[in-house]
Image (tube, rainbow, N blue to C red):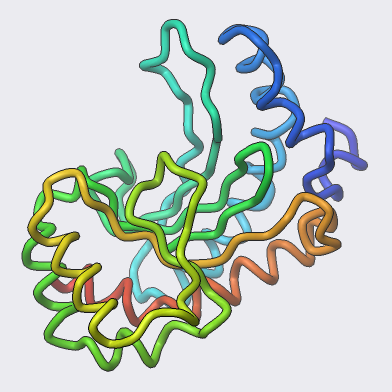
Length: 213
């Protein structure tokens, strides 16, 4: 790994990976170009989160191991308090689609105690609303690019989203930020680490609510 690769953020070349045809070809590019950056950035972010989350956190980098035909449309790193896996636990993500970078606090459908977590968030609804800045976005499906602006959500909208997360098996809850590929933050590794850490710490009270539930 070159020093230039370690210092670089994500460039247009990284986002263009998701236009490469073929599973093997795309995965080779992800492994060669993106995973080393995930490793470097993820280690720093994991250390930062371990300090503030009051428990040890572990880095996971998506392997896409179950894929046999279709190449991945996105890829990501995840950080949680479980060493073996992250999908069944509240966690933090940083990853790329072809047209944006995402930074999430994530509760995906594999979380086994969704109902308890959702009810805890609903019972603390005002805290949830107050904790999420207006320039953040929210998604109910990690496989979709689209996200809603938090700025446009009122208390009834929040309640509806959390109720759906509780009652619909495949419903998810992801809260965070999107950045375009040409952002100077995305292209500068240290700026991106700082920006992601700032996002995670802002959302850490929600993580703790979910974790305790």
